[in-house]
Length: 400
Image 1: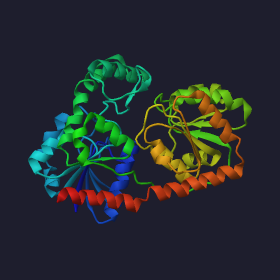
Image 2: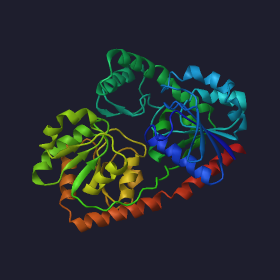
Image 3: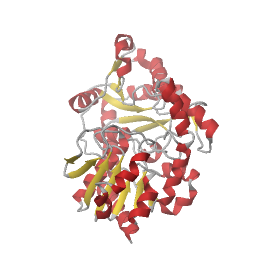
Image 4: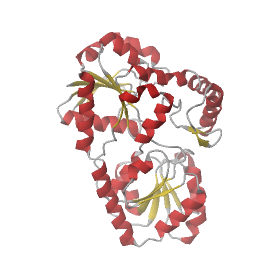
């Protein structure tokens, strides 16, 4: 089988969605599928090899989901046309406006893999920041515009970019979901995400499938400390503000510290946070990431916005850690049956602080045992062989 993957970015760029695409590509390649990847990476290399995968980079600067539209036809008619003719299946994780063009020009089956609530929600969060509440995805222009303005303000976007973003996302962005009608199949990473998107586009229900994210190869990291770890940065949607308020209630009662990653904007106030036993980090990777994990007994995932299937949860399980997470989005589905996970109501400061107190009061042996049960449990739930075989069968189905 010849499979052409089209992804707006490609690992190591991007976040969880790009990691999923990379892992799928590697597993498919290892199972005999011929892979070619087209991406709009910010790298200056036009063609490269990554772990045996052939990558074609078509744009030198990082595009947005709207600026890419005027690149689609030149891409389909240009020097990479042969890749579309070569492919048996087109597997897309973005660039949704290209779907009808591909179907018309090449008559090839298209499988779309969605990793967030976009395009059902133009900002991919399905959370109304203007009202500070979950979004039903039934909104139209005025409501979405208010939410998007709030979203850009939280990101500290300048005024001009905020205006452009709110106009595009609350108009064109709301129409993007219609491109999915042209796909032969839509893949979702959780039942929660599938049901959410189908509220906006129920006509694709018969072509919608849930295939869970594959697991990265991460070793167990022994617990050598009693600190806590949070890897969501200072994002409101990730629950940073809820966490700080909950931590304020408990930090004076214990010697444990709270490690916060992706906190570059706060590093100039490092001394102030240290008084609250908070250790700030920039982006963690490699040895630095492992060192933080060695010092923590539990990972916190206090998201207020629903996530489809967050990798931070899977990674914490693979590392052998107890988890405190919000009962929201795809997380309950992801951790069902795992004994070392404690779920709390999203945004509930009191419940979160009580659960932090409980985990910090656990015996070390109990923490280690629950962490190992999480690791064993996640490996059983999300078996990579089973996941990739399901994806291959879907490709074969759309080829019939």
